[in-house]
Image (cartoon, rainbow, N blue to C red):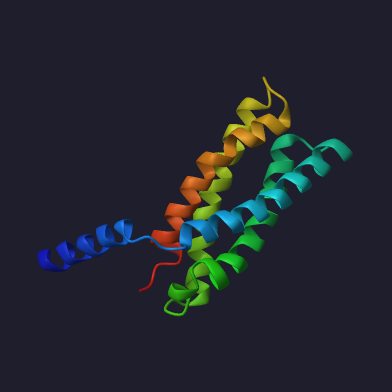
Length: 143
């Protein structure tokens, strides 16, 4: 049991040292879905009477759906062949529910003292780091 744990830890450390394309691809997908998220958020906030929190939940969720498809097929394609789509979808959904909670918390707090778009922009880097790490090491992890 201890040997298995040690070997698993060593494999994970080796992955951290091995340069790969996943973070670049994740960033490209993230950039594209962020544009969709920001455009939809802006439209909902400025063209309707929707609150920034409700608009954030809708726009973020739309980006998550697009992100799952692109990340599963392109970013983490090598590991996607090893895991079931339903399991990955569930894990990705859990990961992104935490991400939308982080984003909504930041937007909700900052929108009371700053412009809505600035509040949204401030939430992006933290959510990016959370989503990449949890997607890479949990949602799309090869079993």
